[in-house]
Amino acid sequence: MTDRERSIHEMLKDAPSLNDSCGAVHTGTEGGSLVLGSASSHGIAGGGGGGGNVGVGVSGPFGAPSSLPLRNHSAPTTPMSPSSPPSGNGILSPTDSGSGSIIRTSASKIDSLKNWSISTYKCTRQIMLEKLGKSQRTVDSELEAQIEQLRETQRKYLSILRLTRAFSSHFQHVVVTQHALADSFADLAQKNPELQKEFTCNSETQRNLTKNGELLLNALNFFISSVNTLCNKTIDDTLLTIRQYETARIEFDAYRMDLENTKPELTPSAAALEETQRSYAQHKEQYEKLRSDVAVKMQFLDENRIKVMHKQLILLHNAIAAYFSGNAMALESTLKQFNIKLKSPNAVTGSWLEQ
Image (cartoon, rainbow, N blue to C red; front, side, top):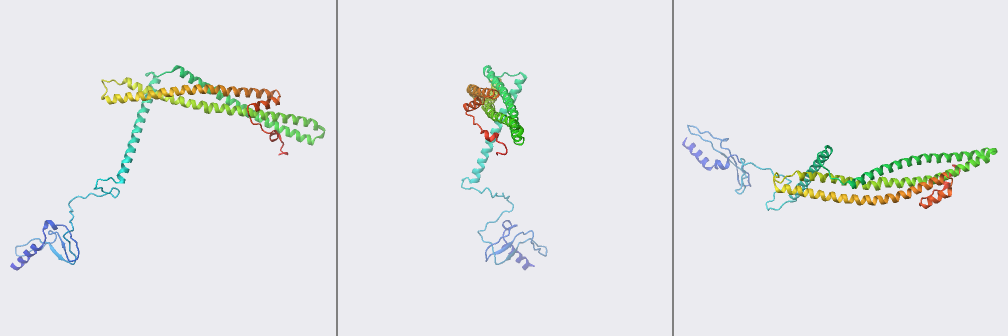
């Protein structure tokens, strides 16, 4: 029994410390030893009233070098993201700079959305208060009278344009009918020798009417094109600036009301009052600039409108008077006077046999 206890004591001396080898498996290079640790899991029970737990050492061809660090299983580990490599030297990686740029862009978009929401809320509130009569609006009576007159003029010109288009469409059907009638008379003149003279006379009359009708259609189409450009492009461009001016006026009144309702003694900070005054000054400057632009554009538009309509009304009068009076020479000279391209009479009045 004494020899057995002595061998157990020698094994305990040769075994590593339990604190260093508990739960660890050491692997190494050739010539070392493999130690399986956990004294609590591998024990030898001694007999004769003595016993203990000892580690079991297994020698092998591979051993653990002394320079291999041990891993502490009890310490928590932090997983590393493959997209963000460590920068121990304090230098930012391209991923870090890209993330910063994205953050700045997102912050800028959020600020823009915030400013737009605040401005929209204030303008909507201002419109509702004006409709309810609880807020005063900035009024430029002279300019607003000119704007209302311009809109009324556009409505009347659009009515003239619609009626002229209807007249041109109906008259075109008349010209087409006259052309078909002339062809029918010419065909009957060939098939009825006894009435050839009468059919030929009527065919020539319808051809002349068709020729003059085509000239009048050219004049009508030129009038329609010019008035359409004036109403739907020139006047619309000025009305677009007027709409921008009206929007700026609403924004100016909204920020003006905010400044009037801001009391210095109730303002939490001087920065907020300064920001309100800055916004008011900015919108006031924009409002005055657009008001000046509208006044200048309306002045130029009025001069251009008078010049264009003077020319077009003379054209329409001379063309219609010459056509219905039967003065073909005056009708052709009128179109040449206004540089209107004339169609070839043969291309219009030629029969289907000639084509």
